[in-house]
Length: 255
Ligand code: FPP
Image 1 (cartoon, rainbow, N blue to C red):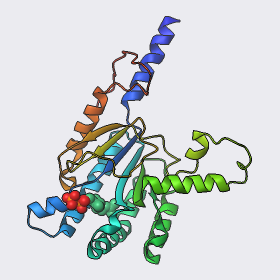
Image 2 (image 1 turned 30 degrees about the vertical axis):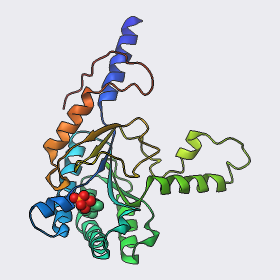
Image 3 (image 1 turned 90 degrees about the vertical axis):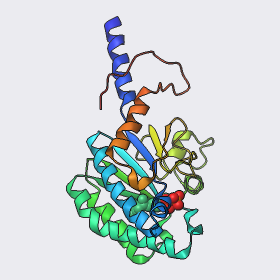
Image 4 (image 1 turned 120 degrees about the vertical axis):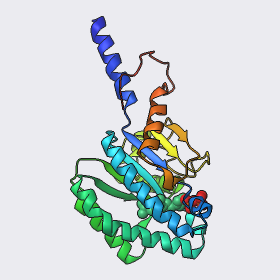
């Protein structure tokens, strides 16, 4: 009996050491470019190369869900020229990368209010999601025109309008969770923000209640597989208690 309990403790510890869902704010493209007296646009282009590295690295390290914050509901405050460049880059990236993602069994989803995007971009997003919908490898989610508060308000409105739930009385956390745009994924285990700022900037507000945070000064275009390994190594040293007490069982997982 005690052996059984020990085994399940070990299994639980191993599971806790795994990163099922990794969420990232990719910050520092502008400063990377400025440091080199280059236009900010070049920083974003280099940022896209870092996205490729992190997608590959995450898939290799067994991450099941990778959620990247590409454009927030607040990013419209940037100069029109930069917003337009970012939209174009997004469209170009979809055109260039989707086939490769698909051939690597990666499922791509875009979360956020896409209704304000141009028709061509909306179609490219829909096509990419349809093409990759049966893939069973890494779940890559790009948050574009996304905000945690936007998502919560949208979910509340959908929940209240749901006929099957109406008149049932108190709504539960699970009820609300079903209507959030990342309801398909478990809550993030690890959140990484590059670029030195230490805040979550309206990212996955509901989902990051018990997420471990890792902040690094490294600028996003410099972020590579080694940086990812460092973040994951830091995560594996943490004792996650989820409001409870530590079991004291050490993790046996290795990189
Ligand atoms: C933050 O850096 C970065 C963004 C707002 C855009 C993120 C875009 C990419 C990483 C490239 C494209 C990605 C996809 C998925 C198409 P910043 O401009 O705020 O940098 P700063 O803080 O140094 O000014």
